[in-house]
Length: 187
Image 1 (cartoon, helix red, strand yellow):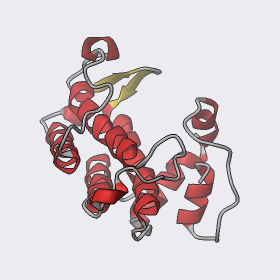
Image 2 (cartoon, helix red, strand yellow):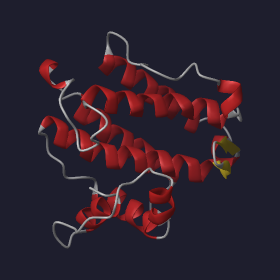
Image 3 (cartoon, rainbow, N blue to C red):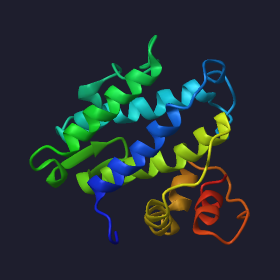
């Protein structure tokens, strides 16, 4: 994976997302994002929901054992605080003894916890860019995380695209790794 470990990648990527979420103005929660099916609130809800899954997955639970209790609106009346609490719970789970040495039981099969946490970091990185665009904030991403994500996705983007996670690949806006990463994910 390079010079950054999975826990550090998730910590930094989730902080990048939360930093942008702190900038959301009251009138921006219903604004559009590059994820055409989600407005700003739905995008933040998606990430908060992903963070809430982390402790469950690292505890070895299956999707069926968790059930539908993390479906729908997880943000309630205080979306920013719910996002921050969800992130903190995810970080606590990742930092738990032996947490990254377990196996996670995902919808598409079992995956080592380290690979799952890296996927969660990637989700935060890409969606931090989406959120920045949705609220008109700085969209420059952490270069080390961008390098990690791009190296990871170069070989797997088509599988994610086939699963409907990414749209069609686009032309990069410039020759930077960030632009190539975003193009790879259909942005």
